[in-house]
Amino acid sequence: MTKFPVEKIRADFPILAELIRNKPLVYLDNAATCQKPQAVIDSIVQLYSHDYANVHRGVHSLSQRSTDKFEGARTKVKDFINAASDKEIIFVRGATEAINLVAQTYGKANIKTGDEILITAMEHHANIVPWQMLCEQTGAVLKVAPINRQGELIYAEFEKLLSDKTKLVSVVHMSNALGTINPVNQIIAAAHAKNIPVMLDGAQAVPHMTVNVQELDCDFYVFSGHKLYGPTGVGVLYGKQALLEAMPPYQGGGDMIRKVTFEHTEYNALPYKFEAGTPAIAEVIGLGAAIDYLNEIGMANIAAYEAELLAYATEKAREIKGLSIIGEAEHKGAILSFVLDKIHPHDIGTMLDSLGIAIRAGHHCAMPVMDFFEVPATARASFAMYNTKEEIDFLMKGIVSLIEVFG
Ligand code: C6P
Image (cartoon, rainbow, N blue to C red):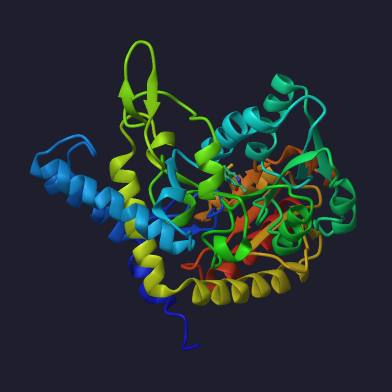
């Protein structure tokens, strides 16, 4: 690979030039949300300045322009994850809404008292709570496959939990709290051998690796636009067409109907059946622009560069006495969760902020992970394609100075 053009990429992100507390911003909170390239910002300005109207509704020119851009973005998403058809791409508000949608439609239609839903012990709350709600509604049972001290799924235990009662497996592709990348090919093959559908929570995976849903053969895949350098308020539910066809709709309203009378409503075809109401037009189009931008750089190049960043950060972190890394999976994405002896993660976050460094300190919406590692919270530095080794050096220097002063 030719040298990764990180400086050129950095120049595309205007916010990276901000000063925070009079210091250059070092943005290492990319798992919470990524910053936006100028191309995404421009796409939204262009839309509202020149092309904006409601979609799928008007015969007038602006509505057609808006609709073309909106549906164009759907095709970009389809190609980006290699779905078979635009009909399999449902726009939602984010990964959270996508999982709730599947729980309340597929789940309610197919999961009954005594059935089991299988997740892992490293899930984000968004892939726990919707299933707990479904279990309360149906009498189904939530099963949790355990993890080890490295933060890896104990695959043998996962396999043991797959049974005739299991009606759905829903696992995180890459953990936002630990960085672990799960053996999703193995998981999907084992579940499919028992005719169990699999949903992957790809919110943390999609910005960092090539995702090919047909090759994975997953049944559902979900992610959020804002973690993929796109706008907030938009996310994607991918589902295999046959499954989506058979599912009841989620919400009722405009756009998801073909014909309405007071006696009966006929639902629209896919993907509109699941897109009630005026969608997040500008956000969807902005997501399309983010995907164009990423395609130009290449997801494989991004993954290779971020692997370098992670290896560098891990090596440097291991040199710091009193720092413990939480999550040391062999197969891992660019996340460094850590704790320091005697300094609470929230204090680490606040003190690093005074140096212009943005990290997340907290439970990362994965409280069961914190319980497992018996920590109240972790400090999490999460890297993106615009981060540099110099920024990692700066982070490490900041941590060392904290330990010297407060440790
Ligand atoms: N994780 C983080 O700081 P939403 O909020 O719907 O865009 O994404 C939810 C979600 C689901 N699954 C995983 C694996 C995630 O990482 C997230 C979002 C952010 O780690 C915000 S809590």
